[in-house]
Image 1 (cartoon, helix red, strand yellow):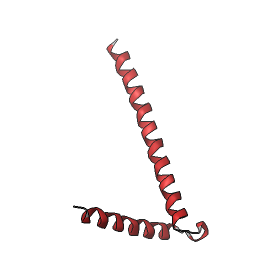
Image 2 (cartoon, helix red, strand yellow):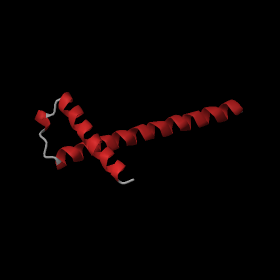
Image 3 (cartoon, rainbow, N blue to C red):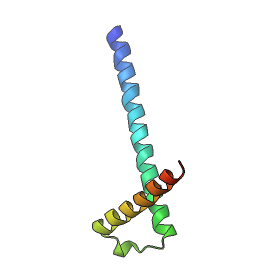
Image 4 (spheres, helix red, strand yellow):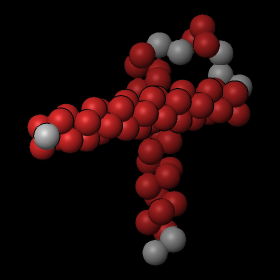
Length: 70
């Protein structure tokens, strides 16, 4: 009986982890879309390196803002 309870809890945990992963993915996609839209970027010009550079610039700005709020 204990095994069955553990198996059910494990299944619920796996399902919850999948939901969390899906929600994170959804947020990441929405964030990316909003940044592209707000910045008037052209998808055709977004190479992997350009995306990494933009992400670094955004992270720098956000980190700088959060440090100034202290």
